[in-house]
Length: 214
Image (cartoon, rainbow, N blue to C red):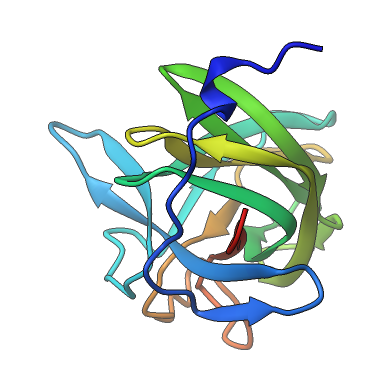
């Protein structure tokens, strides 16, 4: 079977890792998801090793009916300055949020997709779904989730390629109007009582395993 050209370049390793997984032979980088205000009313979603302050602590939307629908599709991106490979078990620490209404409960869950944007084309590496969160009448609720995506086949990024983590927020409402579903993404772990239960984290961490030697 022919090997595509983009897998033939010898990658450089990253300068620093947050920790190593000896069993997998990988160096793990912890990326923090956050948002920045773009031009006009637009918002961009990014990944950084630094604990920068997010412009929003959470992003949310109102469910539309009694069937689960995708309410939000957020792309958290970082672009590599050096070529590299990823392989192993990637981990995601993420909190989904929401609030019910006086008339009905709301149910919500997240789908996380690990992707590469290679020469402008999006390639999916893997995905995972969190447990569903049920929210009662007028109560703000949230759930801390730790989920994993296995990167069984080494995936190569050239210089200028983008690592993308897409977070989809799905939700339903059992009648009435109002309420919301959302996801938290503040590296500084600030509180927001209107959007998030006090006991839960507002951080979004992605632990990505990089091949140290290849």
